[in-house]
Image (cartoon, rainbow, N blue to C red; front, side, top):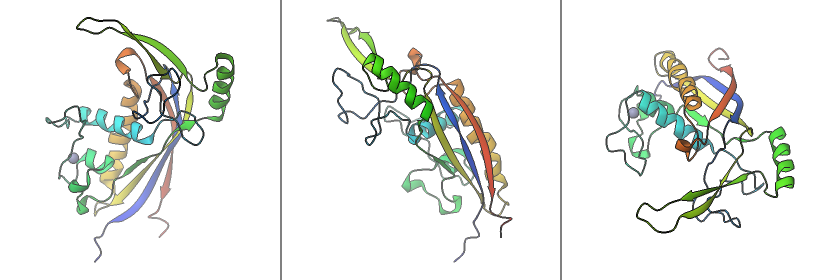
Length: 232
Ligand SMILES: [Zn+2]
């Protein structure tokens, strides 16, 4: 049976994310161990280059928009459980998606896809040159000293980060569905949630150690509109 739901438009955002300070998106524990680095950044296993997972960008946009819209759930704890609800018009669930047990057929599919962001050609070359001079490929290591609060020896650790100035190509895809409203609600959320989320991301930061100044980014993009309704 038809549900009367139709994909009418796709927005494609493409551009560049520039690290304005050291950027650190950590690898999962135990995933990679590079000699001397205690906290390695996540790398593409095929090329060994650092990258920004789409899930990191999307997760940060979601979290910032949850705060901006007052939708941070009270039971949110360190497990970082995201907002979930059963409202059909919820900005967060509609744009960013929801857990399988909160999927509402009448809300339609998740509207936003964020692809992994890889180094631009120019940045790749610059970081390779830097690596040849400093002996560390693509990243820099920062020594930080952690002093245990309950006394004991200060504990120097080496944190790996992508240096300021590095640029990444990024791409977002946003789908507008007509759920009987001609797609007007999804159109509105493109401005109010997706573009706003990118603005907030620039004002905030990406990755880890942000309270110590890491992860400031500049985002430049263009929007392409692919109209599917007029093609029919
Ligand atoms: Zn919701």
